[in-house]
Length: 232
Image (tube, rainbow, N blue to C red; front, side):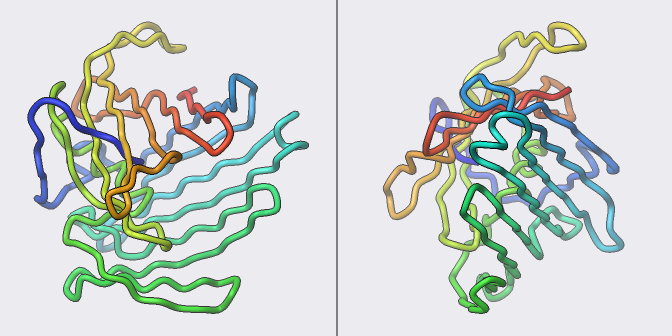
């Protein structure tokens, strides 16, 4: 998740408290489309753990898209009480591409240790105090004040590299949903690595314009086309 720049830039490093903005349990179910074609479904869940929170994201393809390019992804983020990621697990199955990684974050030593469960390898890389994983970053954004004209800067470590993320709050916009027309806050995210902008992975979010900032719609750039998730 990754783009943001316009107006005033806010570098927000304070800890987050997910339960304050959206008390768990929370379960969000989405219809997925790829280039306008029905592609399957996605579920994002947040539950309370003894000493923090656990978020789980599953994406499964269906129909015609599944016969062409099957997707079955399962991502977990175990977060501490302040919302920082502790353990990140990703099982990615997309077409012929299969990966299984586990990342353990050490914020005292500012390191992340990644275990590749397919190749049975390990590596350690430096992170920053503002680092999140792919999934915890969504809750980080939701916990922030989303004022149009501001930007939020943070980092994302996905087990491969450290990305510099910028989330730009662009405007308020009316969005027609199954429940009717609602006011949303539009946030555009981008990622950079070593100063180079990523051509994929940038996401546009339509968050509900309230304290929960529910992601009603998400549009992500892919290598081929784009994926859109719309809340059921």
